[in-house]
Amino acid sequence: MVIVGHKNISASLESLNIQSEKQYWNLLPEQLVEESIRRDMGEMTELGAILIKTGRFTGRSPKDRFIVKDQMTENNVDWGPINISIDNNYYQGLKKKVQDYLSKGDVFVRDAYACADKDYRLSLRLVTEYPWSNQFGYNMFLRPDRAEINNFEPEWHVLCAPGCKADPETDGTRQENFAIISFEEKTIIIGGTGYTGEIKKGIFSVLNFILPHEKKVLSMHCSANMGKEDKEDVAVFFGLSGTGKTTLSADSSRTLIGDDEHGWSDNGVFNFEGGCYAKTIDLNPKTEPEIYNAIKHRAILENLVYEENTRMPDFASAEITQNTRVSYPIFHIDNAAIPSKGGHPKNIFFLTADAFGILPPISKLTPGQAMYHFISGYTAKVAGTEDGVSEPQATFSACFGAPFLPLHPTKYAEMLSERMQKHGVDVWLINTGWTKGPYGEGHRMKLAYTRAMIREALQGHLKDVEYDSNNIFGLNIPQSCPEVPDNLLNPRNTWSDPTAYDKKANELAGMFVSNFEKYYEEANEECRNAAPIVKTSV
Image 1: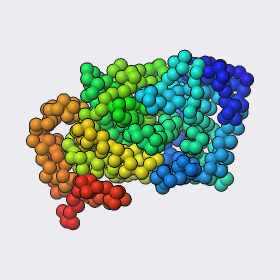
Image 2: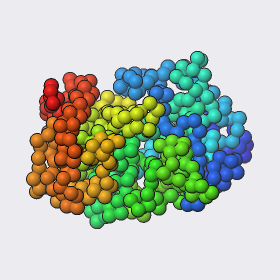
Image 3: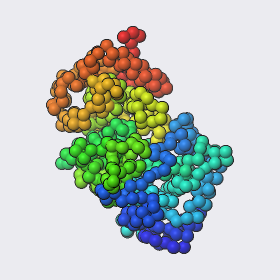
Image 4: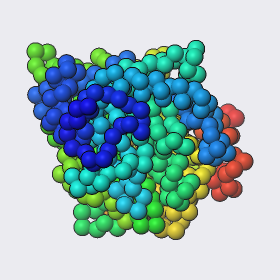
C-alpha cells in the first residue's frame, strides 16, 4: 500500500473497509491542485484559483438527502419531506457499495475539525474520490497542525464518491445520487454527485442535531462578524442562499467570524468552519472586494466559464448555473478572526431577498415578530434561478435553514428566543431584494444602501429616530437613516401605484399566514400576534 502525504502513523482506512492501493493523506493544497490538473479535473485561472466542474449537479439535492432511522434518531428527528428516513439495511448496502468503489482507485484522505470553540470541537476524516473534493475539505474545515495530525483520532467519517451511483430499485433511493447520515455509525456517505456543498452541509446537519440535542448549544445557519476593537460587538446575519450572508458579513470595517454556520453557546458565538463558500454570480470587485480578493491560490471556483479567449472567470455568466461558487480558507479574508470566535450578539439581522418588493429595506422587530420571522424564514426565488420559475415565488424555510435541521424547528426557535432575551439583542429584518416594484418592474436594493442601514443599526444611530408601524405587516420602519434616501425606507412610497402595492402586500401576507399554520399550535401568543393581518378586500 502506497501512502503519500502526512498522517498519524497508526491511522489507516482498514476500519472503513477501504483497500485502495494508493492513498493520499493530508496533501497540501498545492499538491491537490497539481493532482486535479494532472488528472484533467481542473484548470488554473488567471486569478490563481483552480476552476472545476461538479458535473450534473451544480447544487444540493435536498430530496436525495437521507437520515438513517435508528434508536438514536427514531424519536428525535423531525421526520418528513425535509428529513427523509432510510432503513439501515439500505444504508449498509450503499455504504458497502461506496467502500468497494473507493477501494478500486486512488483516494484522498483529510483529517479536519469542525467548531472553532474547542469545548465543542468535532474531529472528522474525509475520504474522497477526487482531489478537488479533498481540497474543498481543506478550505472549509478547520485545519489541524502537524502535531495534531500525529495524534489524530476521528469521531466522524465522510465518504465522498461522486462516481458511485445508486440503483433506486435496489438501494432505496429516489435516483442515482444520495447523501446519507448515520448518527449511530457517525458516518456520512455521498455518491452520484460531485457538488461539494453536500460535504459541508452534511457536517452542518450533524452539528444541528448534536449541539442542540446533546450540548445545549444553538446551531445557526448564519454569518457573523464583530467590531475590530470590541469582541463583544457581535452581529449575526441569518438568511437563505442568495440573501447576502457572505457579502454583508465580509465588511472591511469589522472582523469576520464566519460566513455560514455558527454555534451560540454560553461562551458566545463560534464558527463551525474554517473557510467560506460564496456565490460568485455577478461578483464585482468594487462592491464585494473582500470576496473577490479572496479568489487566489488555494481557492476553488465551481462551474464558471471564461471570458472569451482568456483564463479570466466570467462572473456574469450563468451558462452552467446561477449557483456559481468559490470556496476559500478563511485566512484569505484579511480581517478574519483567528480563532473564529466572538462574544454574545448585540444585533441579529434576518436577511430576505423579497422579489415582490413589499418588505421594507430595514425594520426593527419586536420579540414576537423576531420569533415569527425566524420560524417563517422567508425569501423569494426569481425567474431563471430554477427550471419552471417564470415569476417570483415565495420560499419559506424555517429558521432560515430548514433543509439542514434534523430537529423540529421550534427547538431552535425556543433556544434563540431564550438567548435573545437573556442578552438583550436587537433584531432587524433586512430586505436585500427589490424596491420600486416587484422583480421585472423595480430593481434590487443597492448594496451600498443596505450596508449603510446595517452600519447605522450597529452603531446605535437608529435607536432615537422615529418609527412608523402603520403597514400590513406591523413592522417598525425607521423614517430616516443616514446615507439612505428617506423615500426608500417605506416600500409603499416607492411604487408608482400604491394600490397595486397594497394588493401585492396583502397576497404576500396571506402566504405568510398560510405557511405559519403548521407552527401555530406550538407558538406562544406573542409570536402568533406578530402575524400580518390579511384583509378580505383591498
